[in-house]
Image (tube, rainbow, N blue to C red):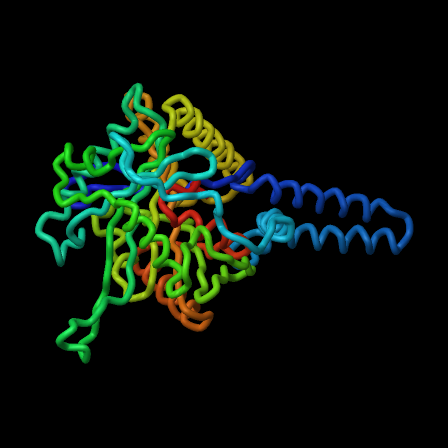
Length: 397
């Protein structure tokens, strides 16, 4: 993200997985197969061969250009295959365990691959309307994140999470509404436990509290309440449109497109103010500088090839493509000057008591995201991994 005065941040553009003229490899393959089928059909001597070739070409062209629920058929094929091949019943991650503090190592969540995740809770709301200095906290947090990309820094993944849900009414006024309950968390996953709270206090962020064993277990259990157990250990069933737990249902959404223009620190506030049980997870990992330079160079090369092909075909240049080209050039200059690169993935999960409440909450989430200039994609066929991605420390999808 790029600093400014009034609108200090800018999200990097989402990468297109295009190969030629913005087409994905599967898309280009289907288009090439359609042309081949049409040529074979037209070259056939018998009428059935001609008909078979034309029909095959039409079907392959549909696969190449017709989207289904916002995704190409070539993108749906591996999702369907994985959904059918993977186990759909059982615990999400039965091998994960909450480990108590020992010596200098704070309490943490230990994953089956040996990764340790430490979690700290931020004080304050972080919303400009409800807090005095949200920008100061954001800038201090950004300064801490920049240190993760310093030479010699250990490899780690940082997750910023916000949980929302219905509040609890006062004991002396049960007739009053409970409002909204929200919590902001910072999690760091590494090979060894990291004292997140101490690192955040060192950069000037006050009111940070590390989560001990009871708080970690409560955080994981609240996702599937009132069922006994945690979101990682209880029995679940993966459906195409959702994930079923014994007394709750869950759905995950991936952020497919971030706001296009310059934004301030309240860009995601619409997603973090709700009485629905939401978990908004942002996963950040520092990208190796050489790899980042190579990725940007590849993107610029593909964009230049696309522009050349479009110009040769007589198509007008797209304003969006021109904007992306300018931003890619700016990003290449920043990387050449030695600036770092951070990969950002956003996942949002909804927890509800039944399917009807889940769909209502999902509709509100999509509307809130659209108002913030964010495009979401529901993780149909892959809600197990999507929901797991909103647990602090799990692998980024």
